[in-house]
Length: 251
Length: 266
Image (cartoon, rainbow over all chains, first blue to last red; front, side, top):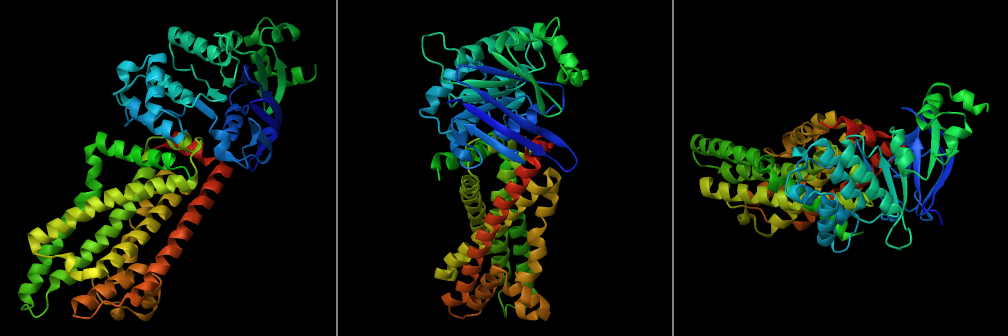
């Protein structure tokens, strides 16, 4: 069973269509990149999966649970980090993780927080208010929060946008290891990842979905797609989709 | 209902108060100022009135109860606003937390903060002006209950207004008690109001509390049945306020306002 199944998902506003009948899946052990220019519908799609935005039509199943019917149960095995969703700045790192640990029903929350503080190199900031951290450090706290409940479905909206290249690489490796365990354990989690950094996408994602004007125009292996569409690399393909989506639709 | 998640909501506000001691001020400062100001006013009125009627229990007691209601309202609304101010609504509503658990966490917070405010007012009123609200006897319990329930109702309605209209709408919610004040007869019997205001008064639960308080102070016996209407009405309003919040949440999710308000913040 896929960790995420999206079927004919649509979001209409009064005069516009944000997402137009999109269908896709994310399987266990898979990192799927959701790519597209600004306004393509990436964040709208993620918001609907997180049930902070109601779809106009369509179905979202997380681990087989219909989000529209059992929102709370579906979200128990989900988590997210987004560049626009930092944790409250007036709470310390440890306090924030404790509060969200309780909200996500984490067992032995203190032990889990200690593990995450170590994993995300946050031990020295444990008692520092999040508002006093640099944007990169805050992003690491958001990622630690996203890992609190060891989610089956992890949604990441530009998670490395404010990180320096070195930290971004470490985070990428960590998330890659999260979806593809190297210790012999079977993969339990799937990741839906949005990014504008095509090198990152190529390095991390097993599959990508290109969104434009709310529709999926292309999908496939990010290392093979450019050649299939006679482009030099993923970035060139991205630019084509952003500027001339019709040329790809007509292929 | 998951009590761990309720505790998470409660704990978040307790952490804020612990980290930023100035957050205690709204729960206490205005109450203290009101007690001191009205304490001296009642003392002055007692002097010019020739002590034929003691204004202390009637006016100062009324101020204390009315302030308690406002502290309950704030105790519920401020934790919600903390989530708005800190751009946290997206994190909250994308978690497994249910709406009922969110509200219950705020109610738990409000119990603690309003009890603190009430304790400060009771001690101050007794120490400075010799007012003991305990002289009201068993009537004190239903008085506190009605005011607490109606304070929660106003708090939930206020949170729903901000959730629907956005962070800047917080300025609509603080004057609500001041608008209701003239109708509930905090300082005067409802019978002196024009008829149409008396009609409004009958559907506001605190009216019954202030009428009953004046009746007891004037030497009358406590009539529990007289307050049963206020208690029943308070419970109905609380249920309606919760329904309004849940409905507003659904509208906000349909319109995609949570992410927008998270971006707007304070």
